[in-house]
Amino acid sequence: MTKWLHSGRRRDLCALLYDAGELRAQSLKSRLESHYDARIDPGSFYGTLTSLVEAGFLDRHREGIADVYALTDAGERALLDHYEWLTERVDGGRTTAGGESNLKR
Image (cartoon, rainbow, N blue to C red):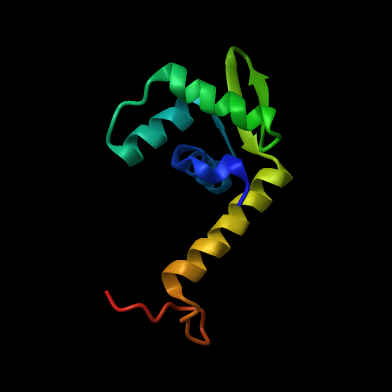
């Protein structure tokens, strides 16, 4: 796993962008705070976004006064690689022919 995925916040930001396609920074922050049910320090949040952009995993462009973020191909690949790794750990390869998990809850 690449170092950028060592942070759960980085993974979660990428997952939100994978689902949405692209989001304004404030919307992304709000969704993440809702998921965590906690306030996120703005400096820390924007630092995380900047590090993902600098590493080549997110694209950033401006729409008016807002920064808008989206996954790059490299970001999507890394996220899907992590998803595959996590699925193997959680599901242990135990899926039915229809793709449904056989996990007992």
